[in-house]
Length: 282
Image (tube, rainbow, N blue to C red; front, side, top):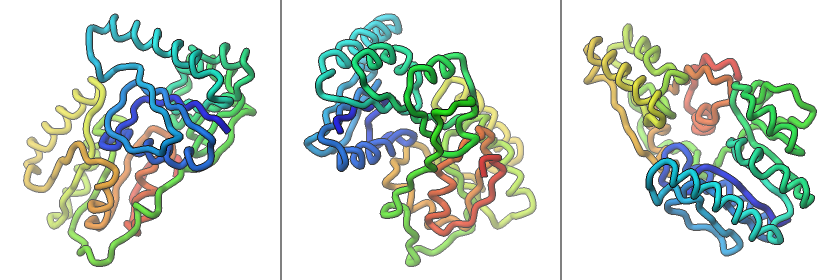
């Protein structure tokens, strides 16, 4: 198989999207060659049969210049590389399907979309018409009714996420992921109320402007409740460093209401860390 992958970012050090570099490594083992078109690229070390092409977000510039650059490069890449792929895999961002779907269909390329979120947008409905297959982690991770849906579950790297009994457990309640309203970080503060020996460790950062506003609310709640000495916020942790935090934690908490099967819960379970979650996907 010759595969074209479209994703947001290729950077092993990215705390949110760094895991995708490992996905590409695995794809490369089963494909003759892999072409990756990403919005932004950073650091990665991939096999020789992988080619990474960036739309150029890392180059910066005014919004309208960046947008024009993205569109021009997108069509340039999918056209110039058309003989080097026979299948297309789009990760999460359905706008790529809308932009390239008709072209790929005309050339006989098979299109798959990976999507794990409870929202059903107009753009997702359009993208569903173009793709051949929709891959998702659970029944509730893709809520648009479609015969194209295939539930695969999440793939967890159990060579990376494996418990280390030599590391002593601490009185830590751990959560990993974005600081955002969808993750309900403020509600997590209640676990400290009647448990003075516990400490909450939050590994994650805020990505969108909306997330950043929520983070300010979160910090204010911490200050108002006088919990500064019982909470540790850690940002910019690459995936390769996460096992250290799981190994130290006594329990993992996940209050996400995204409705999708959150892979950090599965990572915690792989590390033998007890999990408390209110996520309906579980």
